Length: 366
Image 1 (cartoon, one colour):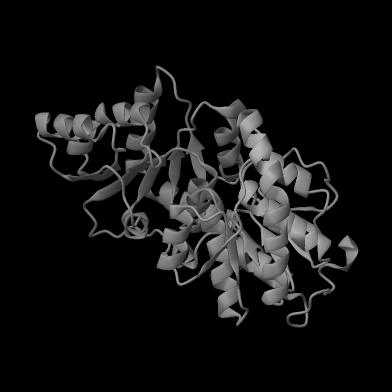
Image 2 (cartoon, rainbow, N blue to C red; image 1 turned 180 degrees about the horizontal axis):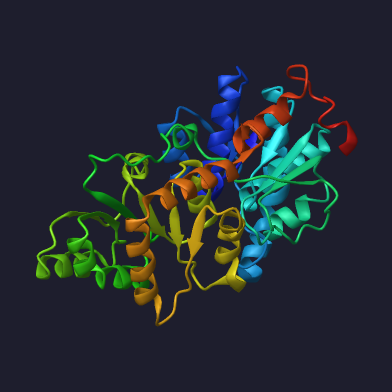
């Protein structure tokens, strides 16, 4: 059983592990709260969703708390029923309130329980669940677990397709330099503005730009490119299928959300991360481990952003061998030894000698 839902940040790493388990002939049952995004992502990837309704117990006021308490016994009964009906032998939770009830059910039913945390700042649900799980996997620098003895540090699992992107390699025939700009699903106006100030540099250096602007800023960005007569660009409000653009990119400029960092790293692409200044700088920490390994550059969002970005981008365009090294370093960071994070989690479920509900991988946790 894989318990994940609520947002893409929880669903996509869960999906990566599910794909690895499916390759190993393991039956996977997905459990979520039943929102539209969960159904859409899982249906597109060939997985069904079992719904266990629940709501956050914190952050929604007294009414939200009371609703959660009201739903708790019914949701717990439904999760236990799913475990029995499907002969579940292990459960993986990917954080957030959608994973809470299934993981508690797994604890009551005494099956191995693995917890994965995608962010450096551990959420409330995972803090509580860390007390009752068998094993914890978390990204580097993650802090806040109430139980720390069970923690193993790995990168975030990403879909196999990112790992299959060929290594970055420049050829003498190449005359275009492709830059992919991603501000997140909602875009990033400050990042967009900094990019717009580099239009003349892009034109002079034969840069082909792929720019995801976000819906709010799409019109302004398109208008500016038209005004500057810059047509060597592809502009999107949102890129639904991002993989081909990752493969095409020689450099990525983006925010530093946990899954964005993981996907950039797994794809072996050099990046300039511009972390969003929220939540005590956790986006900066998301990319810090990658930076320490020489796989990316981190820039602060301030009044000097465009000038610093110009200097770094122009330097990288001239030093393509540096980009190749950054790309290789990024890909190395995405793996634990020779295994990807998704493989590590899948193999932990399987244990050492095939599928065993209380394999040697779990015994120390009981």
